[in-house]
Amino acid sequence: MKDELEMRRVFNDTLIELSKTNDKIVVIESDLQSCHLTNKFFGKEYPDRVINVGIAEANMIGIAAGMSTMGKIPFALSFGPFATRRCFDQIFISVAYAKQNVKIVGSDPGVTAEANGGTHMPFEDMGIMRTVPTMICFEPTDAAQFKAALPQIVDHYGPVYIRMFRKQTEQVFTDADMKDFKLGKASKVKDGKDVTIFASGIMVSRAVEAAELLKAEGIDAAVSNISTWKPIDEDAIEEAAKKTGAIVTAENHSLVGGLYSAVAEVVAKKCLVPVEGVGVHDEFGQVGKNAYLSEVYHLTTADIVAAAKKVVARK
Image (cartoon, rainbow, N blue to C red; front, top):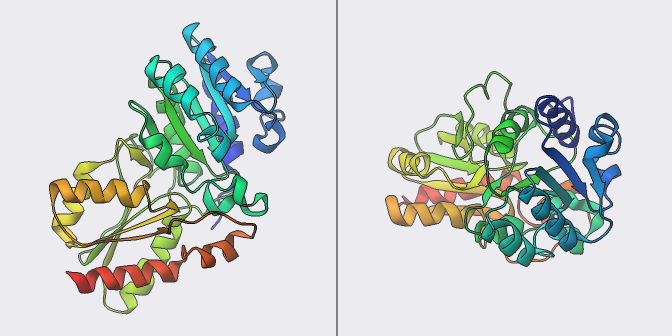
């Protein structure tokens, strides 16, 4: 079932609500207000708190850092590749190194960039941002989780990268499920004893589907959502490794430096078990619909099923 609201609408509505009691929140856009709907919603409610800097992403980050020094809480938005790789040095030096309180939003992650094609298709954005000291790297799964996370992101002092799918997502969680949600903690979706699937973003609903198919074949798969890739929930990974003895990661991102890398780092340190990754294998993006690209890059439910069978056989 699809969420009622698009993620970009959840972003706007939640910021509007938070801004009623927090006049420090501002939005900085790189000429993409209509894409993120900040012109229709947040900007309509708070027109003096939205700044369009034009197609100048590195300058946008510099402006955001400057506004942070004056006590503001800036949210700087652009498409994922331009919010990260295009202005990496400004993020590293002007924001993180300078200890500024900037929230960076990169939209249309991975294959969800669709028709925008290879130049606009970030398979590497979370890997880039994971290397920045003090950076929190977060990818919301659905509307309920995004609503629960945004107040915590606003309250946290320091740089945060939000990997935001703009449109409607498959509903995984309810508001009640997210009552105790905490940044940096994994969210259990389903228990299991044979293998644990750690998934993020659009891959979570596919992991749930994969678990149902595996159940029919006698494999009891646990599903857990890792939305915060950094700092990652090491305790949840260690617990899953000890309980099920096998792990699959599923991400709409390159396996190089992404969720697979982050989970494998913990497994290598805490509890050695076999790990298989479902994700992009060191490739560039291309034009296409989500469903087609998911087939091309092996991000489907069937790919998660195959990885689970493979990793169980390695136990």
